[in-house]
Image 1 (cartoon, rainbow, N blue to C red):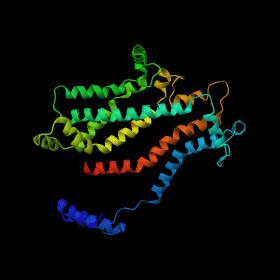
Image 2 (cartoon, rainbow, N blue to C red):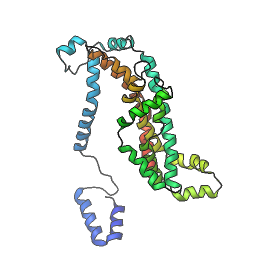
Image 3 (spheres, helix red, strand yellow):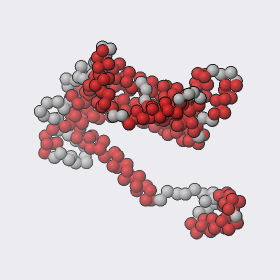
Image 4 (cartoon, rainbow, N blue to C red):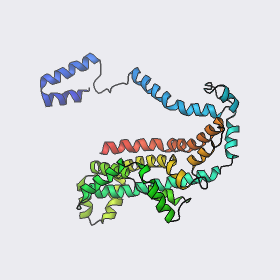
Amino acid sequence: MGELSVNVIKQSFGNGAGRAAARRRARSGEAPGSGHRARWSNYLLLGAVLVVAVYPMYFSFLLASSTSAEVAQNPIPSLIPGGELFANLGRVFESDIDLPRALWNSVVIAVVTSAAVVFFSLLAGFAFARLRFRGRGPLLVFVVATLAVPTQLGVVPLFIVMRELGLVGNLWAVILPGLASAFGVFWMTQYITSALPFELVEAARVDGASTFRTFWSIVVPAARPAAAMLALFTFIGSWTNYFWPSIVLGSTNPTLPVAMQLLQSGFFRDIPLIMAGVLISVIPLLVLFFFVGRQLVAGIMQGAVKG
């Protein structure tokens, strides 16, 4: 608690409260204007959380660097990696599955879906947050209520529609149902409501800007942190989606999760081969976080300060 905070307390609650705040600061040994330092227990807790989060990935790496005989003898390998990692990775590329094609399919679906979800969610969020039209409230409630409907309930009618359109086995059968997201609409509506003043939209209208010009020049820059977060979540969800692509695409034109499942078909499961395939599917996400993570956090913090 700094000197400025003590003065604010004194002005707001009286001299007695200000003196009490000063005594608490003196007992804690905190210098005026200094911030709170994290305790060693905080670092210990964060370290434990980090170990719990990283160990499954490291465990997959250990299995991928072992042989099938070593895994059969000792299902829990030692903490020292083996020397078969590159051999197992080579076996994945030499397997019957078309891994480059599966990787390309996952990239196309994830990129197109993420861009479409962000664009349409921004449009709908702007409309629900800053436009006045009849039925806005009930319509938003209906959109949010669709989140309570399990995805599995719509699989049969959705598959029938895709079959009638002739899209079974085509990437568009996965892309089209994911072009819009109820969660994305709710997310952007809440963010635009709190981060974009209504007076700013009115000022743009007074200056003669059209609705779409206001959206593109005012709403999109203001909602950029939330849009980046939504794009990242959507990309991860599309990249790891297995249920619907396995039904509508199958093994003829698979995505990466479906291709990884094909590695364990048969009576014998080659655990090192499967774990090597898992590492291949995770590496693009790690690269994405490595290049985008810092900018994403900075954008979120900037948006929080502006909001």
